[in-house]
Amino acid sequence: MPTVIPITSLADDPRLAPYANQRDAHLRAPHLNPEAQFGPGGSFIAEGELVVRILLQSSFRARSLLVRDTYLPKLLADVEDAESRAKSSITIFTARQDVLDQIVGFHIHRGVLACADRSQLPVSIDQVLGRARTLVLLEDLSNHDNVGGIFRNAGCLAPPDRTAVILSARSCDPLYRKSLRVSMGHALRVPFLQPADWTATLDAVAAAGFTLVAMETGPRAVDVGSVTWPERTALVLGAEGPGLGSRTISRCALQVRVPMAHGADSLNVANACGIALSWMRLV
Image (cartoon, rainbow, N blue to C red):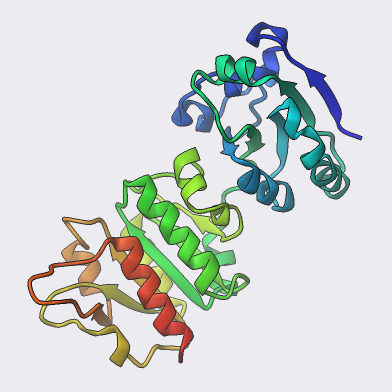
């Protein structure tokens, strides 16, 4: 059985520190203070009942939960299952809604938070290239909504055991709480990595037998519905506005676009990704 600790204020337990209005970048840093619930490689916060349930089922280790007292019965079975698989204990802190809001620093209407360990990361490039058949490569996507939406697309539209996402170093972190929330937890299911050298990564992906396919709107792009998709495809997407860099485009064997109405320039990058993945499923 998990340890359940009722909380009446932030001062009740130093292990509540990760929940106390902490910035995601601070949580990500490799703090070594066990009293603050940070493990090697840092931590992240999952928010909302659905995302926390997915966390408890994933390979990431939940260290603790902070839940509204009325939510506790809903989550006990999931926590017990996670403890059994991980062979480690998970502390559950419970509090009234007003105390929960004081700890977090705003009204947390979802009522469920979890602090989890990043030690499951990173996935190696060799692991990704060895198992995946579909890759989604994100170049400098700094918008958390777009990154979260793309992970949701990848988790829903591509084979979950044969798919991975690779992000450039300047892309945002998929485990930041907003990205994770928008992804509906799929960032915990779809393997990803964020290498330092983007150009070398593109070359490694191509050398492993993937065809690099750029989502672009230029004159060389062909309609997404007319493409004969390669057996191993790496779909490459750039940030809205700047798009993909010229060095990245030069490495892509194919450019595809989504046909649009007259006068329209481009779709949201997450939507474009979803359309491309849908067409890939049809072949």
